[in-house]
Image (cartoon, rainbow, N blue to C red; front, side):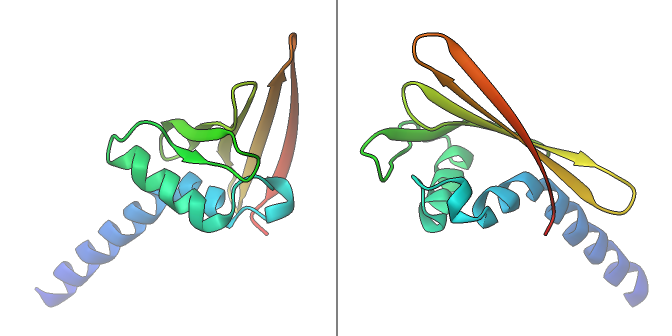
Length: 119
């Protein structure tokens, strides 16, 4: 009986980790990829979104940044009035590939996509 309970708890923990996967990548993203939001402020943004609070945070450039959508494999972040970043986790057999799309609109929109591995 104890083994069944232990296995069930383990499965809950593993599924919980998968549910937070894109959020974990967002927080651990190297600072040179997202200069205007430091890692601790990224955690705040996730907490605000999960608790349904609107408004986001003031970033290092004085603009307003907030998470506009988030699931276990996708996140959309409004970095300012004219820029946005989307993160998508593409699962592969042995590892995850993280796709990051950055869009800037001034006045026409321009998007750039980059792919990263877990390391």
